Amino acid sequence: MSSKSLIHVFLVTFPSQGLVNPLLRLGKHLAFKGLLVTLSAPQFISPNLCKANDISDQPTQVGDGMIRFAFFDDGWDVNDPKRFIDADLYVAQLELVGKHELPQKTCRGRC
Image 1 (cartoon, one colour):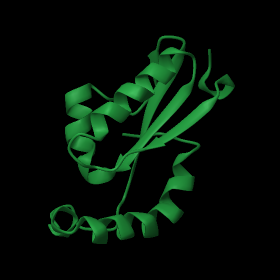
Image 2 (tube, rainbow, N blue to C red; image 1 turned 90 degrees about the vertical axis):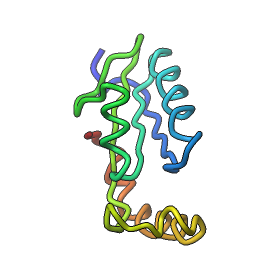
Image 3 (tube, rainbow, N blue to C red; image 1 turned 180 degrees about the horizontal axis):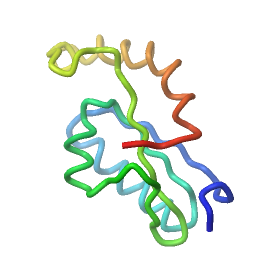
């Protein structure tokens, strides 16, 4: 079944310990049931997430559905420690950039 004919679910995860993998498991479960799932997260976590989960830049068949990944730029330098020091500041930053970045990701996924 082509990804264009599947019901699309768009999941966005906050890049914090204990949050990414449970949402990934949920996404795989939904895909297994026949949905197209796009999991989105800030770009800076993509190298670790892709390596740990054998993620490619193409939608992956899972059961009767598919899962794909759409990483977005959070607007901060990869080495900027602010995202790890002040969660409130980082959430505000994600809200600001998310309004622009996330709608663009709903129709394509890339890793």
